[in-house]
Image 1 (cartoon, helix red, strand yellow):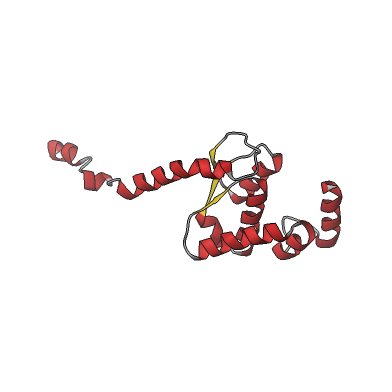
Image 2 (cartoon, rainbow, N blue to C red):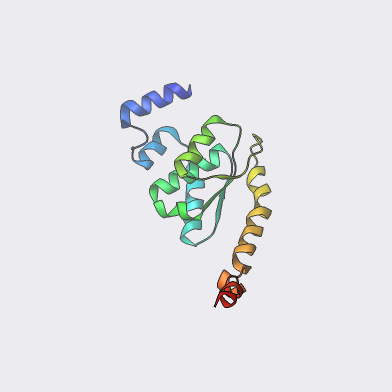
Length: 145
């Protein structure tokens, strides 16, 4: 069934990796993927960090990033699901997953599990002193001089 839909879309749109994102959505997607893409578009517009989950959510993220490439700058992959297509989506988005748990649960578990790690990373980045601020290397320079 999926193969048949892909062949039909390729006949109509040509190379699917180069097809117009909205035409591709009309051929292969549904309202839920359009809604997910809208959430990612609005989140990026607001400057919010965006965490994708499994295959369906990442479909929306990929669509959003094809419509507005700057969306990619706000994306994090919460995890890589067990679905083979999910790895391809993450590769297309150039995202490395925070977690590798092989989940296939469908309720956003992978994204939610990644939140504490992403929050901790943000705190470290926001609170960490630079080498200059911490005086790293100044002692060695003073001793050499």
